[in-house]
Length: 628
Image 1 (tube, rainbow, N blue to C red):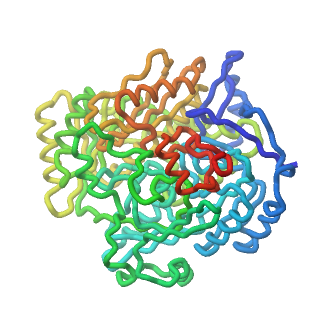
Image 2: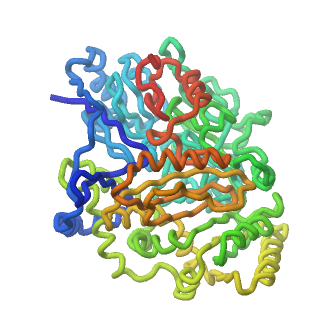
Image 3: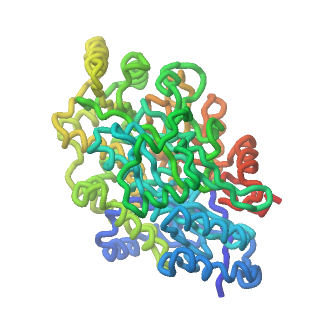
């Protein structure tokens, strides 16, 4: 008998296990690294040998409902109807979906349409059957927003993974049209031969998260001159108050009779680009955050970006309350020259001074990326991240997604310890893998407590020289307090960025390895906030890993906690500290199931999805039909 389980995931808590202390709960972060797939059998044996790790079932919310008692005739007939639309090989029934780091839920059906027309037909069929609809991209989010969750109707996941068309626009490709399932790494690779750079680069780029999800969840990334994922040029579907599907078209294409049919033809004809003639020259809608460099360098009491910002077209930060079909994004010129430096400082004040006097001194001369990493985060990556870095080196960025998807399927199996095998194995193997950075840089990293990763780029106006001169002046003023390592070649640059991208996998590996609780929080502090946020007292934090998209003042806290504390209570106290300091939480990962969206955001979601048909329950909103 098919059953729906209602499970309340506590904010910040990931895969769970029991500590060795009777009566105490211990929760460990979910595995993210696909490297652990190699040798799963060995990891299983190691896990069984570890007396601290004993599998535990998630607590229910007090009731269970049988699908056969609730399902309507239309819902019962829906899977066959969907097969008739997309083909039987693209419809799977009774699926358990596992989130990247949070969530594990049941979907009545997972359907993968292959065209925009099919997608709209699938949406209409789902609305007619009165099921809950969950849009899903690459499922790389870390707050559970794209994982099924219990509600008062069966849930259907509509995956965009077959909608991956990427169409550069015009001969100069200053903009690009992306179907919903296109990955940001794929966009980057498509634009390289055209000497253009993509609109976004995330820490999870090696998992190729989808462009539409970036828009829907307000992802930010490392590129401080580009701003967060944002566009007012989109094609998306919403549901009106009568439960009918409505198509919203703000793409700015020339007046085709049927924009969906036009794009489907581009897809089926294997078009490689759109002509500038296909675009409405009068369209002035923004395809990136307007004047973001000017906004960023105005060091006032406002935050640079956050998930509850209501700016822009309704598709932005909609978190699945509308279904995005396609978006247009600005692209950026590729730099003529690039210089990557790793600057280490004795204190945070020095690091913040460099940010103000070097990185953000002028909106017309920004580094491409400017990242911060604390000492404990440096040690964490070294102690738990060597495996993921080595794996990317071995298989390449483009192949890691396949391993990742297999890992998620493996971890959803109803077997003991599957959710900790990968990280447990990586924990034991980490010391056997060579250090990830050049030896001089590893020594510098261990000598100082605060680190800056800055990529200075040249676009033809002397930007690199200006930035370098500013940096050299600061180095000369503080010769004993600062050390600067210049990457010698492309390989060293790639190692530095992989080290930065391994931040979250590494904390999960260490947390699982040591059998501790874990908590991840992302937040934005005011642009003039010039210190490290002080954590609440008595939280029993055993390791505080802090990194930041420093130019934007967006921080990521990865905390390893004692097994004796209540993680939910710790997160509540940290949120209060952030609010009192003028910060916003979350900053770029979306509310998902981890954060409660503010009233203004929930009211917006009700306006754009008045029947609560799309992604019900996101942001701690109501999961009931019509929000009743």
